[in-house]
Image (cartoon, rainbow, N blue to C red):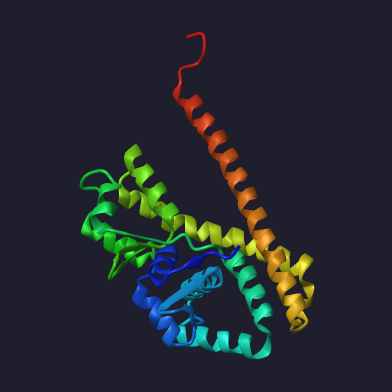
Length: 243
């Protein structure tokens, strides 16, 4: 059964202000709601479209470019095909876990005084948070929970942001390796030219599955490395047995 959402609920689920939803409708990026009387109802296809727009913006696409992309999809494909490709791209690009929180709530998540104006400005430059009319938009709620957890462990937030910046370079390298594997072994035809719509949807689904597997492999490798290096470091600090 398809979930139905009012405008306010749709905006909350997408992590954006209601004014942004209206803007996307005005620009033709978002299909109109289904009207029942004077009430407009949105569904999961609208939510998927909003999340896809957010991910494309994060990748550097302007709203104008996204609009042209949407027009091209809808002009060259039936609605079912467009929805199918959107679903695969949404999984591929990563479901947006953005959330809008009240500034006071955001500060309350961290130890007193930990989140300074300078650190908030730096987090904004990194794309982790953004001031919006409804409050503070956190790009991914996992940043909020893990950042707060690290702060309560005793890590200064400037150190947390340092590590995030350093980590990005490594994850880009890892992602590049997986993409190279995908292109060489799973989609060699991409280097030879374009593909038809059916094959494009199939490749998007394959890449989405590879993304999930890559995340699991990376998490397992990181867990093993932290455990091994942690044991080695603790062993070096402890006195030899028998002394």
